[in-house]
Image 1 (cartoon, rainbow, N blue to C red):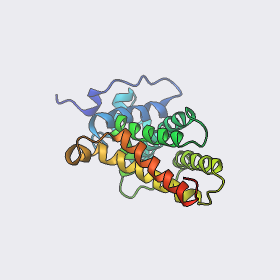
Image 2 (image 1 turned 90 degrees about the horizontal axis):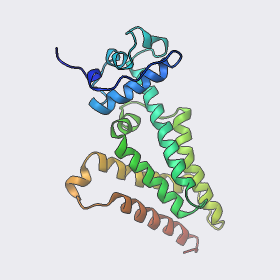
Image 3 (image 1 turned 90 degrees about the vertical axis):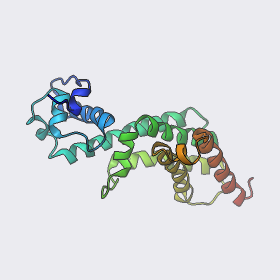
Image 4 (image 1 turned 180 degrees about the horizontal axis):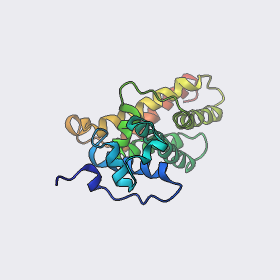
Length: 209
């Protein structure tokens, strides 16, 4: 008998009361092995060790399960970026650089999940978990601006370019564009240097360089 995607992943160990989490974990494993389109709801059930009727207590369909998995991804990304941020002085350039590097590392570690979070056509990221994730960046920029009170830029005018730097770097990296076009690129160094230059430019506009 031909093996399925579910046969290649470890059972998630479903316990009473954790069905929803078990199915999300199963989907996470399946996506990591075979991509977004490489599994069915039945595969998720098999990997979680539950009946094929079980998911519908929590998810209306496969897309609903994928949305829940995307939310899990934003939660993980939030935790990683916050941890990186907290390891450096509040409002420092070093904190923002570390946050960006953690973002890129997440994309490396969880490339399939990253693509689900940001790459599904027609899916918008406007849920509370998504907003919380972006909110960590906004707060980091607020702290940076508070350390430099002469800066009058709106938070978004600084946050959006910073996000563009790291998201662009992450996307180019996991899509193998750097490997093809610029194979010697050190992405951690690239994020650090580009972020430093951008923030130095922001400071220079306020005469604080």
